[in-house]
Image (cartoon, rainbow, N blue to C red; front, side):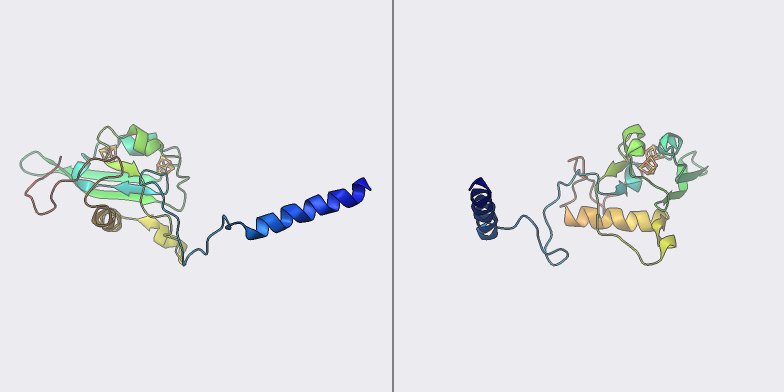
Length: 157
Ligand code: SF4
Ligand code: SF4
């Protein structure tokens, strides 16, 4: 008798679930809103970066490369800033180490590639990602600060 009751209870639960709105969504046609500061990716903002290399030193995988030079006025130029996402484990230590919040967690979570080597991103690719981010977020960084006007004449923040 208790065996029959169990089946009825189980079927009742099944039918109840069938009538409820599903928790799943039809990705990629539908996407869920993701908090802007979620650890989806890394976004590097050149205008905030001093080229100090603290992020590179903090990275346990050694996937950040920073190369700088000095211009005749004694200012530091960032010649290269590169992240090897092929070996990045998205731990976020670089974002925590950066004294200027020039590298922040956030950005695209759907940036899968067919060619693995495209996961190596140089300064130009990283800048493209950062600019796309700012364009889609009303010029606000993932940390909530407002980015400077891109048309304004500035060197570094
Ligand atoms: S991202 Fe931050 S820690 Fe890395 S070089 Fe630029 S300012 Fe320094
Ligand atoms: S998220 Fe971690 S592994 Fe990736 S670049 Fe930053 S420190 Fe390195």
